Length: 297
Image (cartoon, rainbow, N blue to C red; front, side, top):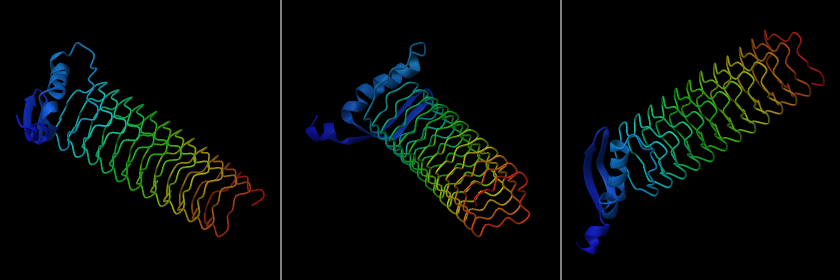
C-alpha cells in the first residue's frame, strides 16, 4: 500500500448491532485497528466493563444510533456533526471533544465529563445529563430542551442563544455561566446556583427559580415574566429594565439589587428584602408589597 493510501481519509460504512458508521472519515490505521476492535468489544462482550480508549478519534458525520460507549474515553475526539441519538455515554470522558452540531437527542450522559468540549449548535434535547460536568464548555445555540440536568456542573459555560426550554437544572451549578439571549421558558432552576452569571436579554418566563442563587448576576433586560423567585437570592443582581410582571418574589433577597427601569407590575413582593436596592423608575403598579423590607431605598 502506498504512503498516500495509508494517510488518506476513507469513506466507510460498517454495520454492527445498533451501530452504523456511515460515511465516517477515518484514517486507514484507525479503520483497521483500534476503532473496529473496540466497537466489537463493546457490542459482543456485554458482561465486561467498557474501558474503551479511543481518544483523539476523528468521526465527523458518523452515525452511532443507540451505541453503548459507557465509560469510554473520547477525550479530544472529533465528532462534529455526528449522529448519536439515544447513545449510552454514562460516565464517558469527552473532555475537549469537538461536538459541533452533534445529535445527542435522548442520549444518556449521566456523570459524563464534557469539560471544555465544543457543543455549539448541538442537539441534546431530552438527554439525561444528571451529574455531568460541562465546565468551560461552549454550548452556544445548542438545544437542551427538556434535558435532565439535576446536580450537573455548568461553571463558565457559554449558553448564549441556547434553547433551554423546560430543562431541569434543579440544584445545578451554573456559576459564572453566560446565558445571554438563552431561552429558559418553563425551565426548573430550583436551588440552582447562578452566582455571577450573565443573563442579559435571557428569557426566564414562567421559570421555577425557587431558592435559587442569582447573587451578583447580570439580568439586564431579561424576561422574568411570571417567574417564581420565592426565597431566591438576588443580592446585588443587575435587574435594570427587567420584565418582572407577575413574578413571585415572596421572601426574595434583593438587597443592593439594581432595579432601575424594571417592570414589577403585579409582582408579589411580600416578605422580600429590598434594603439599599435601587428602584428608580420602577413600575410597582398593583404589585403586592405587604411586609416587604424597603428600608434605605
